[in-house]
Amino acid sequence: MKNIAVLWDIQNVLPSKEIANIFVDGLLSYCESIGNRSYLIAVGDWGKTIAANIPSILSENGFELLYIPQLDTKGKKTKNSVDFILITKATEMIFQYPHIDTYVILTGDVDFRPLVQLLKKHGKTVNIIYNPHNVSERLLEFADDHKDYRDLIPDETDQYDNDDDYSKNGKDFTKEEAFNLLIESINQMEKNKKVPTPGSVKVRMKMINDNFTGMIPGISNWLDFINEANSKGLISYEQKKKEL
Image 1 (cartoon, rainbow, N blue to C red):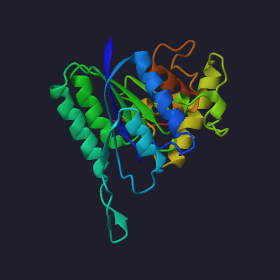
Image 2 (image 1 turned 90 degrees about the vertical axis):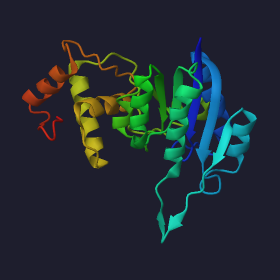
Image 3 (image 1 turned 180 degrees about the horizontal axis):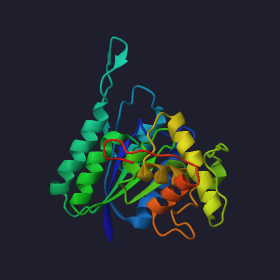
């Protein structure tokens, strides 16, 4: 049975006060489906944008709470120290609690990418829970698994808001459908001023449609798919700083 640590950057993945209780229930149920909950911690500035009921809900469910005030300097926020606290905490845990083999991290911040890489070097499994409107594909590339936080909320709460970028077609993808999803993903990333690399655009495709697994009929590997899209004139690419 796996031993799980949950690390929550609560200002990056923040459910509304109306659904906070059922989201935490869904999160804990998700963890129980994986293994034993060994350590739970949530870090944030409770005095800012976080609803007043959320800290009490977390405390009642066994979370350690760390209050980190986010100071403003001449109207500008200082560097988010929540990231540093969680990254330091997780790094210490590798050696303090070697029995913990699975880390569930609630964030979408690319600053956690080195932590994910470090945990994996030490043989840990890393699952990311993210907000699709506030996530870096470059972070998700390195996770063993990743989920939209809304997937942990029961369907009857209707928290999908009919987002155009969150569709489920319930069928296997044809090559043509995969090409269309590729184009949609690249357009979306460029609109959000993100650079689409082969790995990050594959993650974005999975985020847009969770039925997409990356497997495409007639394609043996992912770069063959990218090259075929290029040869058909559907996309274009270039090499920049050793990245496609």
